[in-house]
Each structure stands twice: as C-alpha cells, then as structure tokens.
Length: 221
Image (cartoon, rainbow, N blue to C red):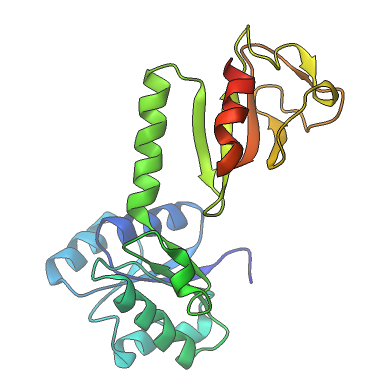
C-alpha cells in the first residue's frame, strides 16, 4: 500500500464528509460517491476532491470510481450495516485486492468478521468522546483513549498524590493480571522497571474490563 493513498468513500453525509476531509488534509486522494444531488453540490464546493453523484450500491457507479487504482473503499452511508457491507463486498468482487471498511449501526463487531477488513461504529466513537469530555470537566483524571477490543481498553490515568502507586517504581507495584502500563503521557517515557509513577503525571495503561476498576483505584486512590 502506498504512502499516499487513493480512497473511495461511499456516502457523503457527515461521517463520509469528515473522513474525506481528514484524508485530503493528510495528502491522500479521495473519491466520494453520494446519491443526493444537493449534497454533491455541497461537497464539490467544500474542497478539491472527485465527487460522483450516484448510488454506490451499483456496480456501474463503483466502476466509475477507479477501484483498480484505489487502496481502500470505505462504505460510510447511513443506510445500515448490511448496505455498507454489501457495497464493500461488491467492490471486493470487482477488485479483490482492495481494502474494505464498513460503517455499522451497532457495536457487535464480531458479526462482520471475515466480511470486511474493518468496521467503524461512529456513534460509539462519539459516545467515547463525550464521556471523555464529561470526565475531563469533572476532573476525574480518567479518560478512555481507545477501545482496542471488546474487552481491552487504553486508558489515560492521572496519578493522585495519595494514590497507592504514587512515587513508586513500576517494579514495586503489583498490577492485576490484564493491566500493562504502556507509556508516560507527560514524560514521553517508555515503561521500564525503574519508571517512577509521579503524582500529577498521566500514564497510558492497557486494561481488561474485568480489572479496570482495580487499576483506576491504584492510580486515583
């Protein structure tokens, strides 16, 4: 896959539009397929990208996008998971080497294993972002950076002055099984046995759901 990608996005509403904008800002070549004519005009006015008016669920439209020259197709329409999965499947039938990403409308990712390369659930991502902002305003010192899998989460934890881990080296802390410190957010440190967990500093910790409360107590008291 080339450093500068060529990406076909089917669906030019909010999710597709913002994904296309971010990709374009990073220097990638983006083609958008959108059914609604008014939305096509809006997209064409917003930035310099190829916009095709048509139904991305039709082979004739997909062929116009230049799949053979593209790295990835992302079906991001708001018409439901199976519509987006179907678009990706059709694109992969036309070009077997193309990568596929589909928007889903619920969080059970396992249902789509083997159908597409990756799925994205925008509502879940928005909920994580909203939760983080709420926790930040409340001064909780706990933020979710990423939901890595259904059972594994990357947390950002700020050590309080009276926390059990405060001013202790990693080798002296007994973390529960299923928790790993992966980096120091403020110190830019990679973890090692001599890393000191400083009060007021933020650390990235990968945790399993079953031990997340215990880990938070270690960092927050």
